[in-house]
Length: 294
Image 1 (cartoon, one colour):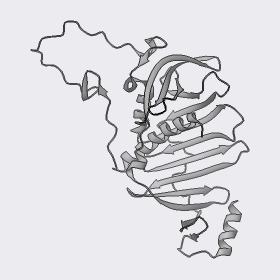
Image 2 (cartoon, one colour; image 1 turned 90 degrees about the vertical axis):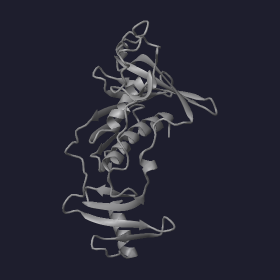
Image 3 (cartoon, one colour; image 1 turned 180 degrees about the vertical axis):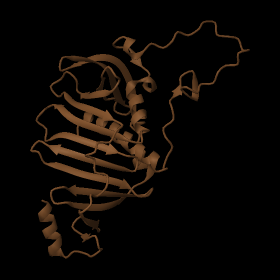
């Protein structure tokens, strides 16, 4: 998987996963970043100095709005739009994110839509040939996650349970293995200039670096992620975000559908399939079911 995809997926997945974890009581909502002048104190809650204390010799000028920062200027990570975006969507109880590859255009997957309501998540992947892959996931306890693969044409759902832990859900977007630098710039996509943050990641061990561009529209919404900018390997994905869940999202098995539970043994071929009544299907029935879904 290309670096851009890893970064994009890690940011989006972290936001979704953090929403699930917070709603299920597995963790607290992310706290506001510490203020540079008062580490350990959240922005908006910074302690006020006692008025009787000597005032500073000079009053500090107000921070410039990010649009006013000159291109090439370094932006503090916890003041960057990218950081704030992850915090905003990571703490949202409801979120909808749509990803579409722009460049190169000849990719198999043309659209990925993800939804969460805090307890459940839904993902729909649309391929170039028009076929879709759909699934919804529910966190039924702090350690169990049920994943339903959905087959709309056949009105069948295949459910598999997995054991997870809080560490898996509460993954960090920023790894301790990297140094991060954010610089403000302007990037043009389809003849439109965007406020852009260039996030450079340096591997602390190998010292190798990679830079990703995060482009925002005039409303402050993240709209493009770009890797290997201005090179032959450039990749661009378009992003749409919302805190409203579309009606098309499937967050439960629709009425009238058949649900089969799949349990895997020591090997992938060691599989047990049961219907809704708990009856175990025969080998012939399992083969017929999977052929029907192929």
